[in-house]
Length: 626
Image 1 (cartoon, helix red, strand yellow):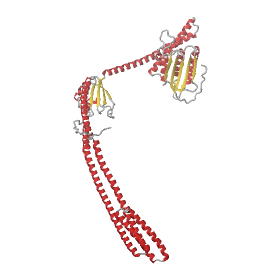
Image 2 (image 1 turned 180 degrees about the vertical axis):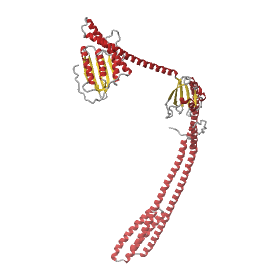
Image 3 (image 1 turned 90 degrees about the vertical axis):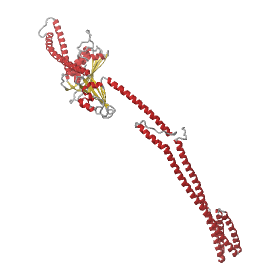
Image 4 (image 1 turned 135 degrees about the vertical axis):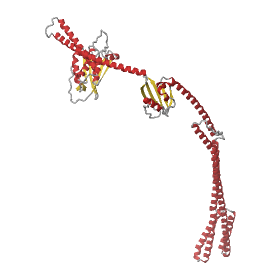
């Protein structure tokens, strides 16, 4: 628990409030005692003397009525005297009771003595009445009346004395309360002045000094305090001021060191750097930036207006960003060619203080590499176009004599103009026919692939039912599957499959996929064709249980003329154009081709095409028999 010293503010406040509390407590106790005393006086005044007076007068009145009844009896008839006697007895009893109450309410000795004196004449008056001594009765009655008058006078005098004492007590209470209130006010005023001098004034000085220190006036003199809490606060403020002054000095030293290191770093940088302050004037410019712009050396000095530099160098340093908020990160980047042929990239970005920092870097070599890349790309595109033109021309030039070879070999193998003589001629003619047809297929594939790569392949789009294409393809390869000992399964062709495309090219897509599946599947395996569709697309999956491929083999198979098995003694013959051409034809229809394969387990090729809406309702196809 914190201890309060005699010089602390808490002790001073406690002393002031204890003094005020003591004065208020004394006034309260005195007021309570005086009010109790006044209350007792009021009770004694109104409950005793006044009631005693009232009952004394009542007893005197009873005695007067007794005297009247006695006189009435003297003149009354005989038969009325009994009633008057009863009234006299009742009044006598009332007289005794009232006199007893008056005696009980009497507080002074002379009052009691006078009451005792009245009792004796009253007894003599009663005896004289019974004896019929009217002269004695008259004399005693006169004494009794005088005694009652004297008794009432006693009561009146004593009541005035009590009233005067109560008035004096109330006046004394008023004086004491007034004095107490004035004393309390003086004490409060003294406490206020004391606390103002000891607390408020030092606190005001401390607050003023704190405001000046907060404003940067670190040399402000902080007043010296005493041994109380305010003195402790002022000493803490002095210590804080010294710490702040020390930290500011350290920060200035650190800032100067950082500025020096920054200046060294900027000077050794390969990039030109310029820092512009929020007042739109240059703060620092390194020598590399001056080397880029030797004609603007007068404008590339600290303190020079940035707008003058913009006007001198044109749009090269114009701000291309909108500084929406302080410390924004939007950057303006421009590329310019200097008069000496070099290319520079100028980047202007905002700083947190609403200034800007400018970087100028030489990217001539990068620009040269870009130009070389563009030239190489142009040459590659030209070479690709020349290749496509060469392939198209060569395909045309090769197909003309090849058609003659195929035609003549068909005539010889068919012996249309008579027997060839030696059967080997017929066999040779058939070999020539097969090789010619194979070579024609290769030439047609090369021509189609070159057209797709050159973007010159045209589609005759029409609304077709893909079921018919798949049905035709399945019928065309059904005999090959049987000859190869393979099972062909087709599913998903019960509902129409509306797509937009060219029937011949779609047929070519799926025949190529089926031919590959037959070629790379061992006898006893199976080939599956499954069509799945939703509102947006159609997916046709051609899968087999053949030899499969690795991920690397898939990449090779999708490359034109790529051979997964590239040995001279390879088992599976082919030109390597089937899958690349199929993929190109699928993409030509706006679709996609995806291959999933595992070595030894088989391959699955999925073709996705856009589904369209067909107006005519197509009937179902009979697909049994594969």
